[in-house]
Image (cartoon, rainbow over the protein chains, first blue to last red):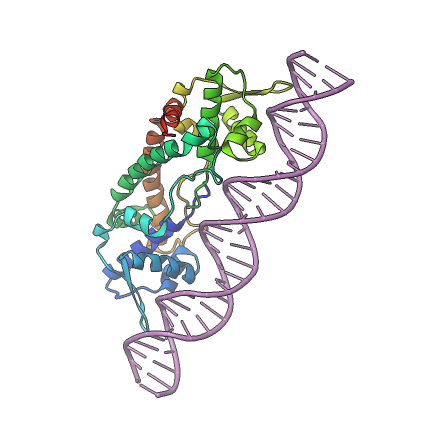
Length: 144
Length: 144
DNA sequence: GTCGTCGTAACACTAATTGTTACGACGCTC
DNA sequence: GAGCGTCGTAACAATTAGTGTTACGACGAC
């Protein structure tokens, strides 16, 4: 499907900020998170910017600036993150309108549309069952 | 996510072949299906080739050649089609290995991996609930 | 032997994702 | 108010997947 890593990196960043704050720090910088995720700070800033728009994190500017959680990890689910960073649908329709003179060409899009909506609703329910607190717990439970 | 239309086009092709055979024809050509889907015959042949590898359709060559169903539409589900045309996972991990010296960087991949596996399993169950017979029925039920 | 269709390679085009550099904006500290 | 570190964002390159297109050999019915 040409899957991307946006949800993974966003969850990584949130877990990192959450853990860092529990260790007594005020804010985390995109530089620190980027080092942990082994990517570029701008990539992190872009993703966190989308999470800020969704009300999941806050940012401060100036010296000693950085990112902090806007809510507790328990109150954030993977669905919140998914909706913040993945706007589009899971499955695409035809790129060009199918032949409307053909019975199948005419009926296929409404048919698939409603099937896809049901499937995406199920996906959302699954994502909503996992909190970022769950994610952090699983992260810390990994054997070393 | 940069969703693609492979599942949609494959379902379109199968519904088209199924309906065509019910109208008494032996085989359907990629040309005919491409006209209905408003795309190029090679695109259809490529997709149907993957469905053939999965045992969903058969092809004949020579004059009067074309494609036919290898099984009844009732016995095919969207999961069969999905697995035939979408090999990869839904969500990707980091493109580069995260910092293994960091607790989060070390634990994030196994954590997300197991979460994603559960979600994809649910997706598969949903896809398996829809047969191509269901799809064709919905297609024919579309208002005109 | 002819002809229509598949099977497949090759290539162009587009779009999304990711990485990178650059630089102004901001606000704390001195 | 000067200096400094970090965000915010634009711009661009590199890579990749998906799709469309042309071309042509392989095949098999007639």
